[in-house]
View (cartoon, rainbow, N blue to C red):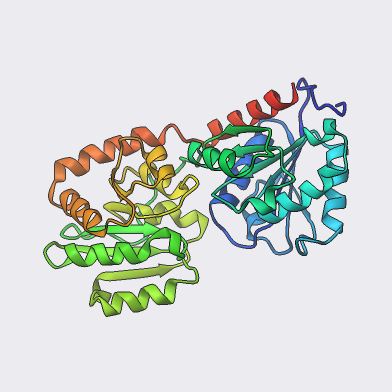
Length: 357
């Protein structure tokens, strides 16, 4: 293909680059995009740091390249990005360091090559790492609004909703067998402040003494010890189970172990966890954070961010009303169908075409 990247009658040569060592929403998106674009016939190479766990989830047909990503100022990775912008049709970067270093590279290249560079905005990231990015794909309208307000140098934005792999969402056996006499509330999320674990524990205190319920929290992260301590201080340790890290192939089994999903996040770019819970047919209760509200539509019960009493009251309402749980379950399933990995890949290709036409 020529430098303009306009020839779409042949497979696109695409780089997906991410500097991340763990496993979270952005990493899931990169894997699903890379696998989906490869399945569609495109030549995809994923750039990662050394020992990235992301590689384990990529299809065998996807190429992998380990690149330095040493720090925010090293010259080696920008040189690789500069070369890729000359030899590939698309360079698609995710998260701060990949955005920063690719932005350095594009600054010294002709505009025709810069048009090949796309940055994926997964959350309300700090603008300083994105000053070299002119084209940003946002995971929600909420994120797009943030980009437009805080990054005036960005020339074009698009919204491409994240998608998930729906396979096994309805058929996975529960990770932990259910008790017919106990309703299990749960959350699968990294233990960090924005995910709202403390609020969930405080809301759970208000319902667990009057109803046959238990709480299951999956994931790890820096605040896990603090949340275990808080559970003890609240006197609910016996009713709260911390499972630790849940590997990708156990996400649906974890969610299938629940009766109700509670997602009290105070800052989300999209929230794959909500869609995964909905795909399992779980009633969802949570906070009406901008992106959560956008993803949920009217298929969840959401209360203002920080309203622990409202969160508890909503959980109580769902716990006590079996018909409401069934209704919310049906609404969850229907809503989740809008967020498939196939649709995400198709919409991403449309963005490429729109930018390079």
